[in-house]
Image (cartoon, rainbow, N blue to C red; front, side, top):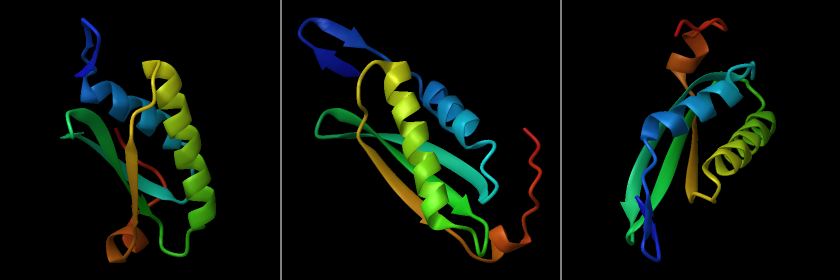
Length: 101
């Protein structure tokens, strides 16, 4: 919930998750992404954890995440503070390219 004057806007975290998932869906080196939201100093913030395929190009993934965050900000009509956390490892090495939603 973000306060501006007397107005209040409530954004469901599912919207943020859907936008990020949609934008990262076609990125080959992304195995999965998870979005959590938190309140930091009375302001909403998001943490995006992106599981990168082993040997994946981190720069390409970060560019895709940056584009996804820009799309999310446009969708929300305001900028949401975001922490991006890239992870990798055995789980991502064994994951297949196709995902089922």
